[in-house]
Image (cartoon, rainbow, N blue to C red; front, side, top):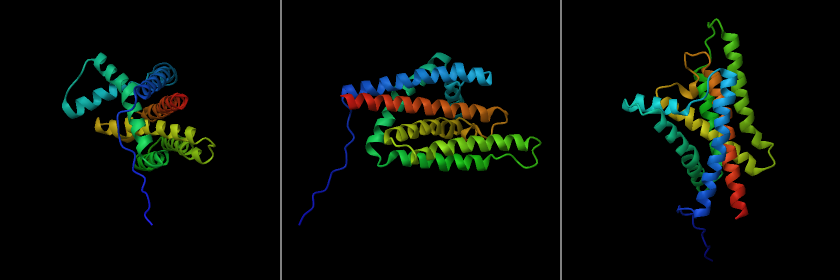
Length: 220
């Protein structure tokens, strides 16, 4: 008896409606990110999150280039509205159990980062710094494992996507720009707080963008 084999999904250009939904989701997520990054983060830390600064670090560190601020901002918006949404579509449609896979990557990499940059025992501010590092690590850990209690597979997966956008920004791009892994090793004492605000902002951005897209797609 012969068995029919299911063919793997083929990567193809999505329909126009799907592309529009991806861009709309990215736009909505980015709008909320801008409020978080430039208003709420500034109110908490005294300065905003600046993706254009990360782009500048990447170009300066690797190519010795410095682009005008407006171009770096345009690149930031292009990534948020088009780049991340397209990456989400590809990963979510062609990677089996992609949410769990992304969670595992974030868990392993961030655990290593905390281990690597845990404050030294002879640091005069060891108690404060280690306590803050533990709270940060515990927050990320609880969000990752919330999928075990989350009754909605979609909600669990879009949160995983938000986690992954943070990994891409501070776990991949930041080191490529000459900065420490997840910004955990920067001399600036507030770098940990900056990383935490970036973590929260990316989770919100990614989850909102992906959720909006999926809800729109299910209505088509």
